[in-house]
Image 1: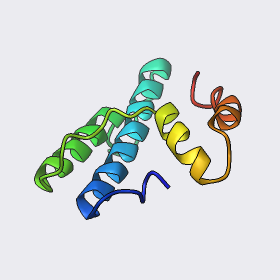
Image 2 (image 1 turned 60 degrees about the horizontal axis):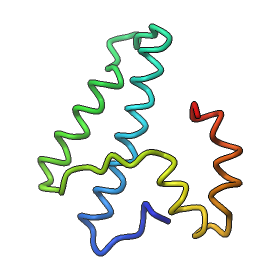
Image 3 (image 1 turned 90 degrees about the vertical axis):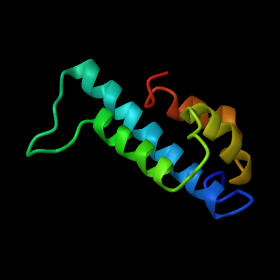
Length: 97
């Protein structure tokens, strides 16, 4: 719900790009932790994150939030009829917490 919540299209775009950026930050962390490099000319998480930030700038959006997945869970879980604590307990280990 957090993704679709917002006063207008610009805010929803910023939410979507912030979430996508967080995913690429997590990818970058995985690449750093494991030494994995994309094959076939693929871009790294850091390069994708830079593209996402550039797109947000090009669209004239407010700076992307540095929202971590935990904050997204706190906001989205109640809207889905769940408690954030229960969701965090299940997803925490998957998200590296």
